[in-house]
Image (cartoon, rainbow, N blue to C red; front, top):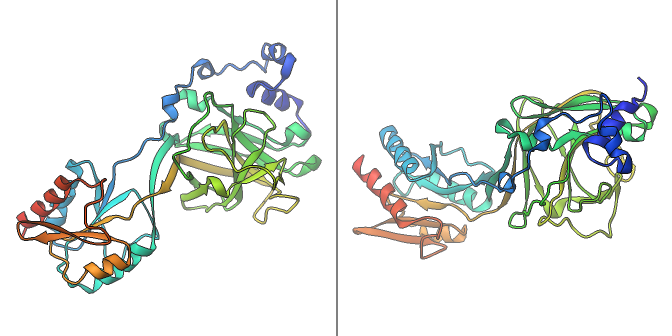
Length: 364
């Protein structure tokens, strides 16, 4: 394989970094950027995080009762589904309610209370759904490979059931990286209300890098986080903003300030032979590669879910409080809040709890 100067020129044109010769390059055959979507103005509203509906998990109870509760909760705007007692995820995103239909005391309660108290809960929102992508966002992305330094690696952006970062990476000519990057986003993204990004990605077993920049400069600091992929599984890769490493050309910059999430100008995915400061990527393999990303989201740590106990919660007040959890149980003709708080959390309206109790009682 030999170095292809045409790929370098196409890169310079796509990212508008050719300087004073840019107008000349853009009109040359084979270099003109003919992507019609490029002329579309990106609407800032297209990149405002979109929170999904709050989630609810239903445990135990007769099938008819659970089905009725699922229907009730969905009518109230919840994403509701039944789950077995054993299915406590290590992390939970957007779960606001856990409805326990078994009568208390039940041996499963103590286990669930302990697990719910220990696990991390998140609020997530979709930033970009790559499976339902608008042309203006697609036009932001382009290849940026080691051809800029004489290498022969070559990548592509494909849109097939999401964003596909594919190509062939080579270490010839002292190269060894391929990447795709966005043009600068203007105005920049303000993600200051969130703690990090979450990638829903499936790869080929290699280790990739996720890169953000908070400066519009082409060669500005790149804030990186490496992540591993699996061949047969879509992984949720959480990347905290404060956990990203400031680098310049794969060299760490320890004195740099942390990434500023209030002004994200560009995003990048990279497969590189190197990690940082000359260390090798332990999973790197030269040759063909493929990484698919279905969605890009943002996340922040959220409150613990509320436990709704229509069948009562005798003796559960102390265990709930110890785990930092709050529950709601029937009390006469009304309800009582037990555990860590004495009032319902603000994100759960009383009408929701009342509807759950009514649906539970009507099925019994």
